[in-house]
Image (cartoon, rainbow, N blue to C red; front, top):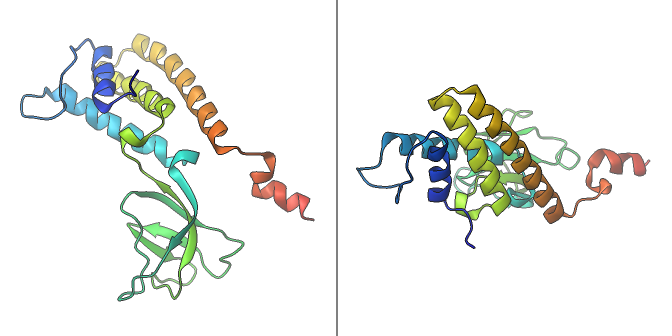
Length: 192
């Protein structure tokens, strides 16, 4: 059994509105509904991944200032970046485009490397299967609602989406091996 491909996902989405499956996503003969479905899938994938999950978030990621400009350029697939406020008390970093900006000091110039938590946008084929399924089901609901506006279809799709999200959350939680002690507020109380 193979993992869900982008083509599989788009075919699932267009089947919800009664369209026949396609064999490819590229080319000039691809129907407009397929292009719209693929755009909705990409949009939904970005939105879901922006939440920050174990599979697409890296901690202690080293960011080094550019030697010529002293700016920290973020990877092109950065969705969110954060620095530990307990370590970087003199900075208030935010993402501005693909550059790290310090709001506290009003500058995008950095004198040394920093360690950050970064949430990355991954390609659909790099996602765990549970998230491929969840994104496909969510995108199918959104696509059908935009295309048909049927409350009945949306009702059925919403139930499927809730179940798919629960499986995705469960898979992500198991993979992360989290405990209650991973939460900063819990550690602060224990450290008193």
